[in-house]
Image (cartoon, rainbow, N blue to C red; front, side, top):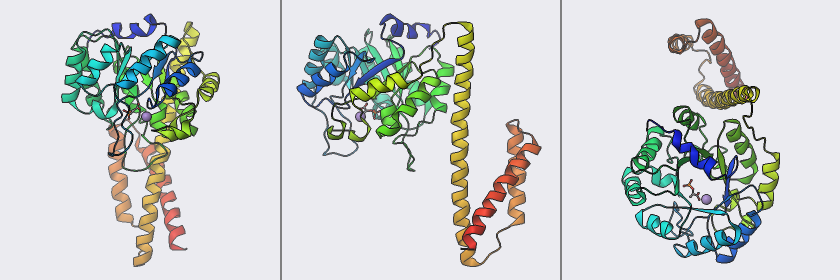
Length: 360
Ligand code: PEP
Ligand code: MN
């Protein structure tokens, strides 16, 4: 993928707005539901209507989508509202049906991007298409796997490509349904600045109360668009009920979000600065998270020492840690003085935590 300049052009050519807003239900449920949501979205910033027809579910027995029937509803919605339509495809049969029904944007889901065989099958079925194809990140935080999928599509002469960041699975429970790991889309953007990058805050969040903040971070990081699950009755949606918002909330959100546009060199400078600052915020957030994790482990050590009545301060172990960290710090351009100061503070906090446990 050497000359990727052409990739960004479809975004401008379609005049879909900045940021591009894709909205609509997680799943198409009934014809009435699709049409009602489309009409409620018609005069908002959303220019593309999304709805899943084939739904990948973790466990069997849940609603798995209405199937090809839903494509007719999407077509009708397009005809009535003028919005472009988008749906997920997960194999060559889906691709065939979606193309037959003139779906404008086909996206590849996170569970599909992990499989090079399926991606190849989809790429073959899409060969030479002028439809827009968006590739969600794989469920696991693996940038080469994500890029590999894009490369397979690009090699089949599919030029209207883009990516969707929807967060990554973790075993550990965090405040997100899927951890954003912002450093991954940031790296992707650095390597392929012309590949349109869209954020799906709904699947990152898993809950509607933090969707706004995720959208703002994405915009601050210069994402090109947002894909937001929207339903007139989110609580009673047949899938992903907790994370959907109403078209009305979407309108308010788009008013409240700060969208930045580079119009002159001063604005460009401020944009660049803002992007870097947001990157710093992401790292700071991770630092605090990691430190919190470290202190939790210290608490467990405190419990153990309390049980065995062992002294808190283990000088030999502490000196080993310091020695190792000074060397690692040096490899990353951190001075010995800084590493010492930082670890002394961390160590002190660790001791305070353990003391609290032992004296309780
Ligand atoms: C979806 O967009 O409804 C979906 C299933 O997303 P993901 O592939 O990101 O889980
Ligand atoms: Mn969903």
